[in-house]
Length: 176
Image (cartoon, rainbow, N blue to C red; front, side, top):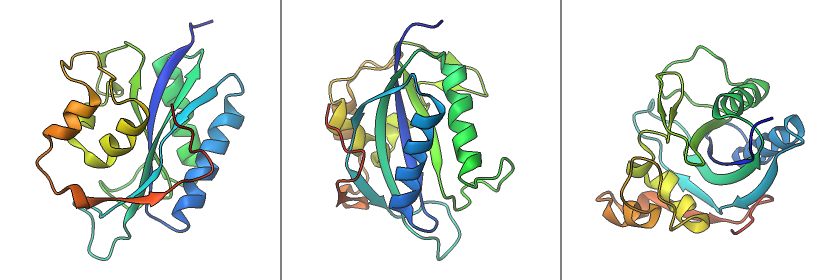
């Protein structure tokens, strides 16, 4: 059995009942992985879609942290399985609307540049819609390969802070 690892997971939805999609997705993850324990969950944020078709609904985003005795590859497989269960096709256009998007942000101190699973997520330090919720639960987190904290990464962003709007709490809000 693998050691227990802290996994940061970004969640996003921009189709249908976005809040319900996020809540159902976390519920499905926890059901699929009874060994996993939810240790932190950020608030919900709304973000306008970037590089998506005109008229695409805004995203609802958040971040959770799970502790589980899985390898990063196993965790990634569970995330893909839940996306599929929630109706996300394996083959899809880039930036297509989705009921649920689950991205593995980090896996403890694990680092990999494998094209199938790059961890830490290669663009997380440039994305306000990931950093804003992540700073709520892990502001002092330093990821492998980065010399700055999550809070410092967010403070260094030059995009419009209003592009990510606080929506509120949800079923899985659990401050660290």
